[in-house]
Image 1 (cartoon, helix red, strand yellow):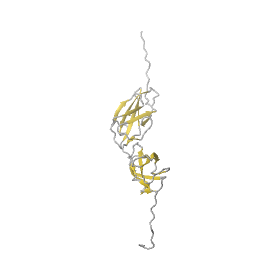
Image 2 (cartoon, helix red, strand yellow; image 1 turned 120 degrees about the horizontal axis):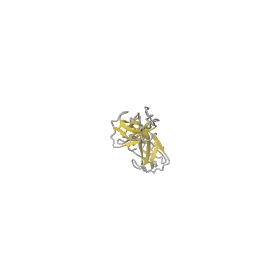
Image 3 (spheres, one colour; image 1 turned 90 degrees about the horizontal axis):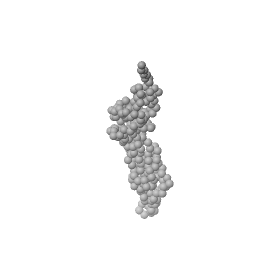
Image 4 (tube, one colour; image 1 turned 180 degrees about the horizontal axis):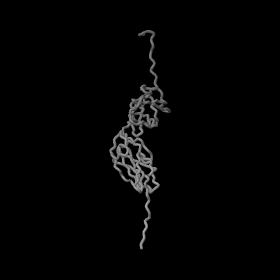
Length: 239
């Protein structure tokens, strides 16, 4: 007689353990200035029973939605880059991950969403001197204060400002582009400004999404070291 025996059957009814889903490949990002590309990554999924078989991902304008990118199997990869999208500035997008084990059990996790913003911040005005106190002339050749205002009704926060000083608008031939942090006024020192020359303060801003504003320049100031010529003073109106 003949006999046969199978190698057994493993019963697995437990879903994989949930992991963390990133808007971004290795770290979670809150903003992007790209309207064509999104990336995602995930970590921490595992299954003690039969192990992870594959991951699927989708992208949508709400959690669990695939109205932007339909479900796609990426095997055991734990990240993706999706190109050739048509995203809208001001919209939030979510990445949803399905983790499958060998027994077809599924665990679904979502990202916290990423906002698309490709509109740069706006510098309103740049002043030679302090805000609303613009100067046209000064006798100090060693230093100058530059101040600026900006529009604050943007949907994302500003990250930092940069400034420069030049002999033409937007130029940086006197002081190269320098980090100003979140300050809206800087004192530039250790200069060697020349009498009769005109100088311009220039400012640009960066936001959290990586957008850069246009460069905005002051209306310029000149150095004057020459005192007025002496006149005559009369005891009387005419003589």
